[in-house]
Length: 338
Image 1 (cartoon, rainbow, N blue to C red):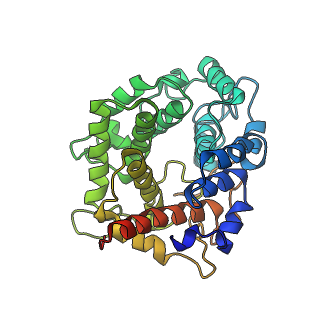
Image 2 (cartoon, rainbow, N blue to C red):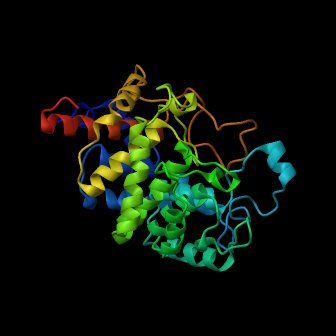
């Protein structure tokens, strides 16, 4: 049994005493408990802790802060002065999905319908569940829509049409970019994987998912192909939450989910990223959130999910522990030097 799976591990106890969203995922992913044991805790996301706080901030029309990507009263000048906000419907729904808000609950189903009726994209007034034009936004809208049982196949098709020649995606394509980006690609991949989990996917969506994965794997999740150097130093730090931002831990968590869904072994090209995660473990066995969002100011948020930059983060720690558990247990089972 992996060391981090043992119930006497003090870090596991710390996670189990955290928010319900952390507790139920720790029970499932670290302790390997069956659904019959963690399902009740997952339902508590709606009624206690971070999930309940986010839901309490929802407007009567189903939206958060009166808008889709940005708050309803947000202006371009406010964007320049305050930075990108994280309080509108889009980032809040994404966060609720990551917390594990039960999509079968009455509250979730009512939210889906209210958003369908009332929420329109800032870009051109498109209905929320129709998506808009940027790949990052559409990727996460696919992930959230599929998670909550919405038919998002039309947005998936748009993403497939926007795939670039190198196999990934880039939100700057409409402004002339011809190369994919790590950030855009991980946002789309998460959407395609959630769509596949919900529907089985299509031959085309599975092929696109694999090409996006190959884009990241060729770069070993963090390096440039041209010179082998780290593509962006921020990829080596950890966000909490990520929103649209890429980091190697987010990528590894994605590949863990993909491996579990498709019953496939870890790709050996992620090994350097795995060892980077291992090297960042603190002396007390936890991992810290160590960076804020690119650009200053950082933008408004409802509340923080951690105690500050450089402080241990339950979310970062949970993710790090489960990707290492996935890698190490696969290695032990195969007896190979991955």
